[in-house]
Image (cartoon, rainbow, N blue to C red; front, top):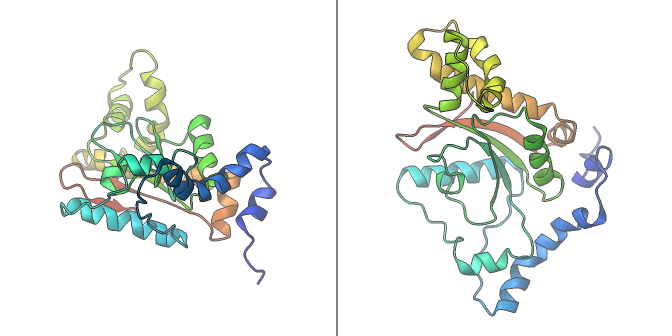
Length: 246
């Protein structure tokens, strides 16, 4: 069996970036200590960058367990950490999540400034190329090693898609464009009992986003070489707990 290719080799076959972009991750690697030193600030201990995608996922889920238990402990959110990050970033995870105000990823996963590259869109869909491109940037340039699609209970965008499918509801302005990518998920589960439809549609919508991202060339190649994981889960608004898919 051939040895896994490096991230640089994988990306080299699919992406050509300007020198400034390629240098961004290297800048991030040295920026933390340098900026704090220049500012004369005390060093904030940085959590070690996870060595594997599974370790990155484990770190996210451990943070969620602390959040649920009321034991959140991330101290990497103050002015010192801000100064450390001023010249560069190295987020270990991308979180694609809903724009819902009740779903703040840094708090839910108990992570600090610079740990997560968060992409938000109502309904946490991966249909818009601007969303996908943003995710690609964090993976290809900043070196993130896990993508987490975070849906949540009582999602208004999914409810809108259900109303569109079951009642023929239409929406004003561009709201319909937000709901449209979720409609296929609703169509797949529309025959479940009515009281289970919302939860089923939320889960199916997450699954579809994970599947769509898994087919993106840049991301797919890294997953194949065990350098990236794409997964997801549903955040329960009342308990604060995230349930992983499947």
